[in-house]
Image 1 (cartoon, rainbow over the protein chains, first blue to last red):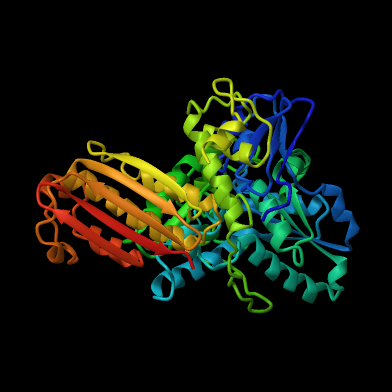
Image 2 (image 1 turned 60 degrees about the horizontal axis):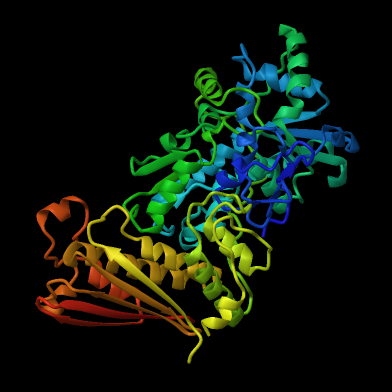
Length: 412
Length: 141
């Protein structure tokens, strides 16, 4: 269960409209007492509710920048999506130098981690050990969506760690060797455009990652610093290759897996349509499935600043200037295997089967009588969700049908 | 009476696109019961294949599902043309579907074999020009 809060609702400005509730792919949002409420067990962190909110009442949760000052030696991991947030920057080194000037002692590109992940996926596709098609786990929102709602196909998830986690591991090894400091004096930070990533890294990698920062928060200070960097100040810091960098855009990874038998989809609706096909066993002749919850992949992350399509276009232009081979040797070889994924039974009504049976039966009875208009007036996203909430004990009112308790007695 | 949930669906014979609605709905119900994904997968695939069969061969039919503490029972009945040779129909790749239907990607002759494969018990009763009733059971382990 994902008990971590990914999205925070800013109470005063939320006017209780139903936009986010209707948009949420896991039906995690309800409107109660005129305000949106999120069920964090179901939230996958896709950020759709943040994007769609007309009153800007939602914000992703992330760590404050000031926390970097608690550490003697600070390393920052940068998502490639940050490279394309600034106009007129074709040299990644300018941006990486800017980050050092912002207060970090060293920078490390997530793209290096991405390259290792892509290589591992390519190996997995070649081998006959994996359940195919293999679903990329680079997008944590997609991974969460599968574990919450498509548990039938969870065995297709690539058993490979998130690129940020792997990159953090490598960066920590370097920092420990370079400085000779204790682990506690070294701060490893990630700058991400993705709410789901904040949740993922905080829940599963708190031993190697000390803080997860938001692209949006560091954007303007960083932009001011970059503007003042002189040509001779630029350090040669970029070691990533084209391959590692372009994978932050949709369809990026698919060009590097040595097979044509792949499918890519991005944006929550596209992702769901592919997962539905997979669920019905209709993608079995494919090797690889690349899915991103955001419309242009990580370049479309909800904490980015730039228009996602412009960002993707810049990605293409920047990638052209990068080397074909990454210029990096790890201090230690580290395993890239992920621990087995845990399925979240978030739609289960009760732990006791007989109790769940009673509740489900009652839920179906109520649902049968509802108008099935999915109008959202009751504060639930669909009539089905209304029936579900009702049997869970919530007091709800449908404007077309009044649920009566005594009819339950009649039918027994 | 044994405690159970009964679900009843009318499968529309004209509708290829929405075919699978009943299995989708059953899946949702099984999820709310907290039934394991392996069991849900079996039921969903067996039922989906059954629905497709009824649409292709019998112009639709009725699906009845009973969910018990230890098992799920699925009864699919139609008033179609019946199965002439059940043994043959159970062979993988054997199909009497028309060319038109095959062009839509159905009728690969895997329906009944898959239903058998994914369930713990399956019986077929069929009479020519009267109809077919298929009863399937998936155990909840």
